[in-house]
Amino acid sequence: DTGVSQNPRHKITKRGQNVTFRCDPISEHNRLYWYRQTLGQGPEFLTYFQNEAQLEKSRLLSDRFSAERPKGSFSTLEIQRTEQGDSAMYLCASNLDTSAETQYFGPGTRLLVL
Amino acid sequence: GNSVTQMEGPVTLSEEAFLTINCTYTATGYPSLFWYVQYPGEGLQLLLKATKADDKGSNKGFEATYRKETTSFHLEKGSVQVSDSAVYFCALSDRGSTLGRLYFGRGTQLTVWP
Image 1 (cartoon, rainbow over the protein chains, first blue to last red):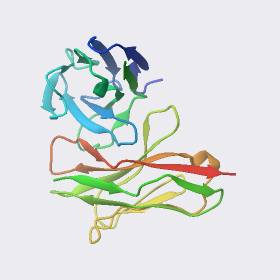
Image 2 (tube, each protein chain N blue to C red):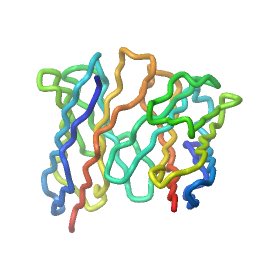
Image 3 (cartoon, rainbow over the protein chains, first blue to last red):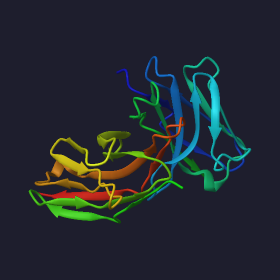
Image 4 (tube, rainbow over the protein chains, first blue to last red):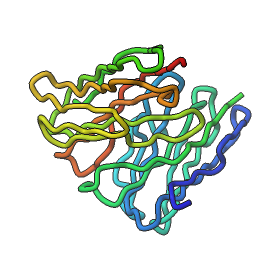
């Protein structure tokens, strides 16, 4: 399977704990996006990378959130001191460049903060 | 700014019924428009797209026409099947921006009964 993969698929944690999610984009895709989807809502943009450079962060991405893409391939999204409001589906998408436009999404990581 | 307003669901239809899901948008630039579909337990998949006014996107019997004068991109299918049961998201991408992020509507849950 050469699609976008995300791990873990599900994560349950206690409030105050740190969590880290991983996204492996489609090989050779240089753009990588993170979105957050809460119940009954559409995905909301969090941040995106062009190769290893993080080019924009949404105001939704508080200082407890950090994302990296150290080698321009896989990316990690870390949430520190989790809060119940962080419970959501975290989606990763990738594409080759803006002329392609179509973003290819992974299955998501569902986070539940107790 | 950029935003998408989508018909609220849920929508429940009998098999072979006609489907319309309304989508209107607001954009600062000249957007590309998309419909994504999310089947239970899966990630978002591109269903169809249109990149300029009067273009019609089509796939799997679904169609949507980019209407600049009414800022709309309504999704239609002449005869739905049980397998079409899913959540449908309308989205736009601002082609004038190098960012390429997607702006999503809230999603419409479609359930088709046999």
